[in-house]
Length: 587
Image (cartoon, rainbow, N blue to C red):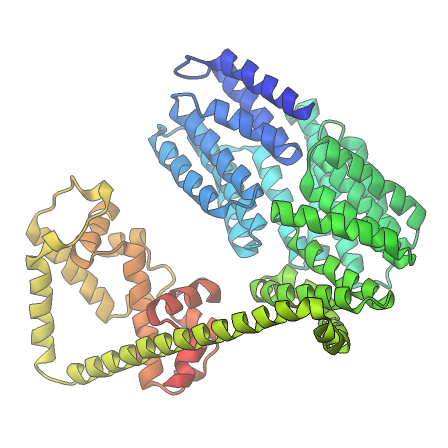
């Protein structure tokens, strides 16, 4: 039935807007509202509205449509496609004439990008996007958008463990929305109040998880989740997610009857609204109740439902991980060694991958600290039944194949390491040779000649498409290169603000000329050029300064102006083939 309704919806919209070069303002705003509403409640419907908007010939409409599609793709876990659509959206945005509407749309883009980074668990990137967007919204006095940014920032604070700050900010925001109710439509006011109360309840719940002796925090969480449900008449997603969390509160209180009833409501509503994410969580939570009450057969049914949904949608990896942990425990209790071994192995294999991904994220570090001891228990179960499983004839073939695969992977790993070490050693030798050259009086003259050769062979460099038709006087190009090299000699590139606009202003040119010259003379974008200077500096310091090799990755990243250790380590590995720590230890 839902499929038929979606098809009819698409057919009606397609006929309604077909053959138009641009939507009317009323049609555009109507589709905007439908995309926003359905992006959390029904992603497939949101896609229908976004693609309908994308048929317009108006650049503003195309920008909004592609920006929305980018976020919707991220909700589906399609990160690469999401990034591609976001670039297309930015391209259309640049074609929109400067106006208040363009500033408002740019702020909205920052919100969408922040939400996408949040889904990827890149919390620092998300909050940076929100702050940029809120600044733009403040410039044009867009109070409604500021409220959205403040809600999202409070949720980031909750995610990284700043519960009291999150609670304080949301309470202030709730009062502000009440005082300015006249600024909102009735539907928008209800949606804001629903989201605010849901986030406030979530902060109290998370705060309790870190302070389990403070039971009164659960009472506050229950109160605000119920308020969120009351306000969420027109927002199915908030209603379902708040009910799900309310079930968790009942669970924490030991009120299993109310928790079970609430989770079944969530299962029904999630199926009705085709929300597989919340459906997966609800099935896991039901299984958890049955495990706690020792109804193991029922628990296994719902754990397996959770697994199948997680595998189908490639989301909820955390619930998939914990589900296999509990299945291993249940099969251990039921004296079924083969299955206990199987699920403990799934847990251990996935936990290692999950742990690697979570290292740099505060929320996931909190999770890791909470369940780190589970790994020891899984290792015990695995060891307990390992010999029994190997005696099972039906599994012998599997383990032979597993052994061959492991040997193959070990050999491949050794080869990859050897390649990386060869690349690293070659780099070390190259930099040592450069150091010796610098001590040679003739080096400066040779360097000048090398630069002149670079000037004489511009045709060998592939320019970026946007600079193909640009032409600058050769003397002016040489002057820009000369000033760039002067900045290099002063180690200006170690500053965090060594960006295209900053350098253009520093050497008294514009960003277009600077980007063109860097592309033409060095064969790379300004960002690549800047990163390479930073990484080369680090390599040189590691080779020549034994104290520098003792610094942490974070400290080294900060010393050369990188915003965080993750992006620095990624750039370093791309250049050397190994991590900074591996490079330092092998010099």
